[in-house]
Length: 429
Image 1 (cartoon, rainbow, N blue to C red):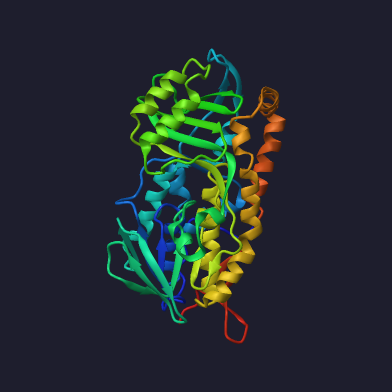
Image 2 (image 1 turned 180 degrees about the vertical axis):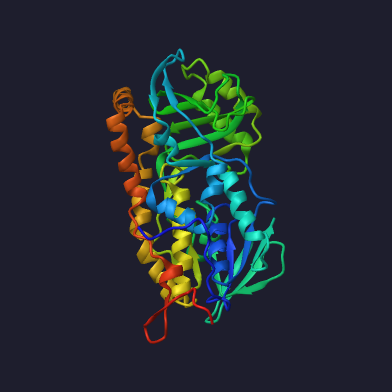
């Protein structure tokens, strides 16, 4: 692997002429903004929410490629300071009797952090002490009109503006992708399961542990990631055909979920459903993936879940950070010439992203096997993974997917001059 450092490098302003709009201020968008600002570009990040979204699921990083990118971003130490330190997760039976423990790394990787905490780190790094990154909250792109020189953008609330490039980093249900590439139904592939998550009281006294119960086609869990004595998380997965519901009607979603779990045999299910009824932070979505024919169209390009997302299980956050690094690096290497940069970006990450998505395809059956036989088979596998030898083997397998990309060292390797010779991005004028 290339030499890494905890100290971010500073490149010359090779992209000082570039004005970029990024839609989405969760993870992928601010990560790209960090890199583009280092290369000198002017960046605007627009976010539909009125502020950064706090909380959310915990996300993990594993393997050399993830570690390399976190270090080059200069956030490795900060991620470790804010990590969850999540421990064992226990599979239980209907009477809450412990059946098998899952190793911490299996669910939490090398280091794990709440999505909201990671988003805050990236926002802090891109908004403090720099004039090159602007955040606009509470607004969204209304239209995109491209010509040979740029993209005219109108917004739901703000005045129209013109940009050189537009990046859709606004998640699985990307509004930017819909505007530039067409309706979501062309790209979203339902994988046969749904997932829900919400806060609940820590009545079980969990301390960085979780308890998980499965029946054929459904799973309920209570977890505590951060050691908070009064707060836990409810986590539900169930098997289903694609459902028609209002994504903005939380009451309808709660009813839909509760109907699937009312007769579940676990003794703590009533407690979980009572918390669901009171929750004001419900996350609910299909376990699905995005498959697009290409990641760019003209001056618009997709990053992260908007282009190759998976709801869960596909190390999506690590993939987003890696691909943000590659997209910014290829733009710098091409001196902002978007056609060459976007083609190189796609060539670099397409197989990598597909591999991560392939791994994610097992998430639903992993949590909620569809039959009793498959449920027993899964639990036998869990027991084998609790052995030190097989746990080490499984760790290597999961890291292999996350590390299946050979990273270019863009900041040190440089970009190609007009005559094709390499020149350092860090050279002084």
